[in-house]
Length: 110
Length: 113
Image (spheres, one colour):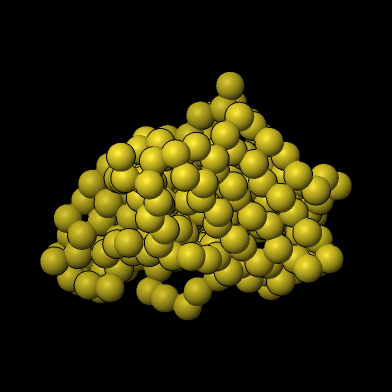
């Protein structure tokens, strides 16, 4: 069966520091992969999506970036975090229909 | 691109009442419409979905209806229970080509005993 791993679960980072969140998927090949951000009490904002290795589409201009170095690995990065980057980050993969989410990373930028 | 709007943003009901959440979408090529439930601090999980070739689908106390002409779909929860309290998200995507999954803004449902 397919599983999705996302880490870390929580992260506190100072303003201006770099960020790297990793997501890996098991049990499937060539998945569609997504990064979403959820601000406190808000909806799921699509940040990036990828249909294959090295293929990244950005939905929202921001100081975040994403990479897909391997088929089942999706990384969210930032060179310098802003206070507004705080939120709950969710990685997801989608097969033919249903999307499955990772456990999420609660990022607090201080 | 696809845009999904969801209403209401909050919904309070008494236990045993019904709850209805409505969504509209903009991309006429979207043909897959899932609903997710997110409990506090946890990941969203699929509760029901509907495809464009179906107008209604039921699963026990939960049902979803779809009107492709009007481009809107709704979630219906009957006989609500306190454990139904959560945030509910609708979403829309295509099933072919690139399947970008776009979510609505969420509805916080509170079921009071």
